[in-house]
Amino acid sequence: MRALLTLYMVKYLLFNTEKAGSIYGMYTGLVYLTPLLGGYIADRYLGQKKCIMIGAILMMLGHFSMAIPDLPFFYTALGLLILGNGFFKPNISTMVGQLYDGKADGKRDAGFTIFYMGINLGAFFSPLVCGTLGEKVGFHYGFAAAGVGMFFGLLIYLWGKEKFCPNIGNTCITPANIECKAPLTIEEKHKIAVIFILMFFSIFFWASFEQAGSSLTLFADRSTDRFISFLNWEFPVSYFQSINPLLIILLASLFSRMWIDLSSINKNPSVPVKFALGLFLVCIGFILMVFAASMPGKVSFLWLLAVYLFHTLGELCISPVGLSVVTKLAPVKFASLLMATWFLASFFANITAGVFAGKYDLLSTPQFFMLPVLITGVAGIIALIFAKFIKRLMHGIE
Image (tube, rainbow, N blue to C red; front, side, top):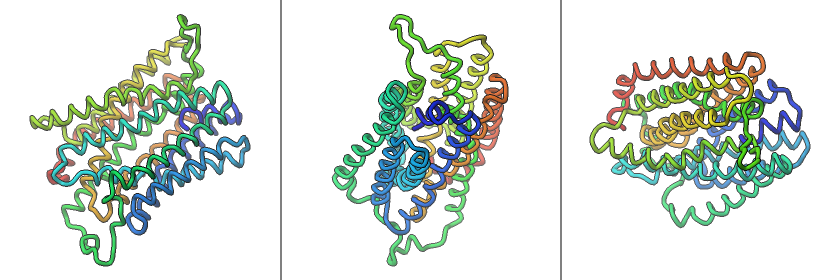
């Protein structure tokens, strides 16, 4: 979706940049708002397993609706994808956390990094498949291919959910479940406060990072030389969306091992320090974009490769670590709901990112990319200043 959506709106539906940016931001934002509903329903009524199945079905229908070249189907498809993701996203992350008991916390960050690497294996191939079909054959063929992929993903889930994780993903609250009815302790309230503090910093990261599907895509389309001379071939713009997941596949296992090795010698950075590092790395990426945007004519695609490298390094410091720490800090009775609340940061970030991307044609390109430099740099400094205070509120959780 991210690889094709902005290009589809600008080139096929002929929306202007501001309208396309707003719709893209609203869509990607609401995708992270509906997990509140899916997390609540999972915690109170259905459990994670059933909600994941419902979400997968809705997303599959959404992709197939997008394949129908009619504007009402376009908005219907976005609605189905938004709702489906709400059921899917918080609950599958919560189930990963449930695979590890309290004694396995040392491996939980590594486990989430591997989980994250698996997600990005699909994210690497999807722009190559859907992007090629979408840009070279027709946008609607690309969207249909996404629906086919979701169908096979659903089949794999139905086959493996009881085989590999039969004892997790069930409803938390029952009339006999005393633990779920007990009031929160002071320590639990502190831990929940940390989740919200980290959410605040992640908003700045994701608002900048999510320019990948909007302003950075427009820069790749308009201002980047994508021609490879020795192949006599210009590769599609959507291929840039495969760079980030490819780098995650290559680097995630290294980060996973690095956290474990650093932990074994008591050198593992605290979670807020990792967040600060992530913000500084995405800041460096946009500094490169300022230089690239200042050059005359079209620039080499190697600039965007370098930008995505720094952004991916930052993502690996924040995203899987954030997912892991929420499962460790959240009280059991609010596990899915607080995971959904964690994704709420991405709702605000994506709305902001979409509105900001809509200003791409209103500012000079260097000025446009300078704003994320300032925002992420300042946020990183603040996170670093308050790191020790935040760590104390975690009460030994790492």
